[in-house]
Length: 128
Length: 385
Image (cartoon, rainbow over all chains, first blue to last red; front, side, top):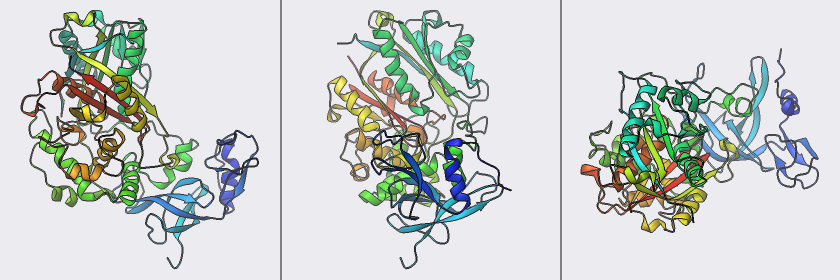
């Protein structure tokens, strides 16, 4: 049973995540994409921002392999990356199902969590 | 033209491992010592600047510290600007002093993060915060992973190498060897750094700063009040601060820090350029961070920080003595380093630095950095009159 996250401004994001769809905000006026969500477009100030599915493809902007961790219940090593979505916004994520270097193409997949909606993680695109 | 403002007193707390005092008593002793240099006592203090002392209490830091010192300031600032707070506090104190709101500003900080065996962290963001939702599920080792992501991007874009990062630690250690108060003084090689355990690629254990106890106090005042100082006051010539994103994924260019803006403001106010500077006290929480700060403060071009280090400019005898007390990497890093950078700059400008004294030191720059990912930068230009 998933709990609902108590951030009303990101309800749509987590609802989409629960069905395996990655969404970011798209501005209806200027077409700018932004993530995380804001009440209006940071580029043109328009209020007409809407959560919109993205293609799921992106490029690794930076990456670090964490070798030692003080975070409970987390096994090392694991890979933390900043992925730039094809639509523009960047997010912190993990690289799973292989390794990826800066500049490599990756695509979204999902990591299930106990009692919480799944989080988007990324895997290397085949044939890189 | 603003009225001249001076640092009239500066003192370290005991450093390293402090088991016979509390944070408050350390701060009190340092405050009294710094005030004595300024020809003042605690009864002269009318403005107080402190923060980031979580064991004293998270809220109302100026009241908690002021109460302990018996001080009733009419101007106070306990903004949480991370390790850069103390460079920002010099700026804020100058503004309050020049506006005539106060005459004697005391800036204090102390930490026993080593003795307490628990590095204070930012209050854990709850799972509904932006950090909780979008950063924490991925296991960022704050702030090491953020700095690692910045270093990795700098290496990718500019060809900066792990050897060049290691040279930053080696340079700091050479200075520390000249400072009897430094925590780590034994010789260090590039190989030592590269063979120390990787924590978060590309950062090794020895690319990361120390975790020690320490702190200090600084007195900022006007020319007329600085007249009674027992030591020659140091003039505050230029100041600048700049604030950018908190979450690392939100930073447009991971290789550029807000230090570009803070340094430009500070140098413009002082009417000097980077080439005039005799010594540089950067915020060396990580080796890679020094490379970014050298570039963004204009001591070398963007992307050339690695080779600047490799050419030995920052070492004893180099063209830009840097981290001259050994820095956060080898001398002391008490959780927030910013105040110690200022204290070392004052020490050098007064000619009191002993074996590590930079000959003819007239102009010094202390550059503070705060937050998990270069969120805040503040630059202070100090000069000997």
